[in-house]
Length: 287
Figure 1 (cartoon, rainbow, N blue to C red):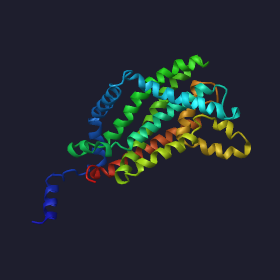
Figure 2: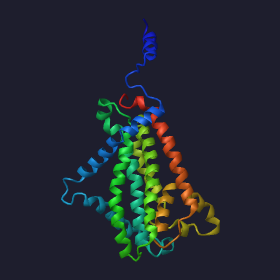
Figure 3: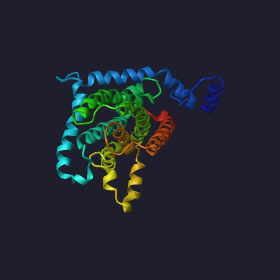
Figure 4: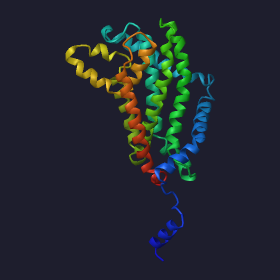
């Protein structure tokens, strides 16, 4: 009997090839049933990441604060005052914190498969749990950072307001968006390992295009630059940051258009990312 005949016979009797990719519905069902693995893995990494440092998990908060301080000193001195709002410090801190949630999810998501080759090759489970775990880990790290952000805003002249609660749905939608992006780059780096070297340049470009340390609304306020502002507002990373700023500090308000952009982007990216990642399930650990 030929190999083809054996394969047909096995399929007729409900036997699947080792490592075969299951249908998408079954794949997602199995991933959901094993979601606790992704959650536990994310928590474990967060708890052990800074265990050897004297300040421990405090570094989770100190790192973005130090980054914001450096950007504040540098760009606060060299950027023209007409390109930044009066409440520059809280404006900058929010931008840095939100952007780091995105960029950390992408850079870590890029190594979710290639960085766990031993796990991928030795155990059978839906590999999509790995980029999901990466993004959950970044979410667990950003939450205490956001809690620390609130007194910083108060100290810098932004009193508590009901809009601060809108940070919850903003982070929820952004987590979905980041997960889709992590799935996409997680698969791409399996096929193109050099992509890991390019991702920092991509995130740096987005850093400048998202208005972290300057206001795109002020830079493009001239009528002839209105088209550039509209183009910039189609960048979902910029809109996530602008939504957070709009609800948490005085400045340009959050708009329905921003919610439309981030909502559509999150749905499109998570759907495409899931299918794109699942389509290569059989190749993970075999390349």
